[in-house]
Length: 52
View 1 (cartoon, rainbow, N blue to C red):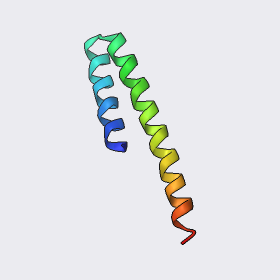
View 2: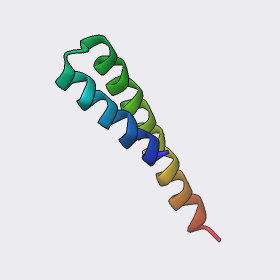
View 3: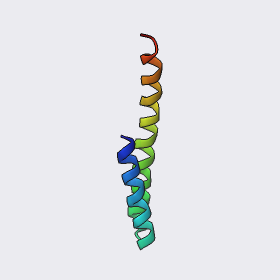
């Protein structure tokens, strides 16, 4: 999931450099959602994995 977040961030950077503001904005939004979902799942995995 972190991999996809980085991919969308790179797409956003390229789109912003080329002047495609709408595409860059939506790609940044997707990257943020995926990154925060990754963080939540990583913390939950760490917490529940330690109980064993």
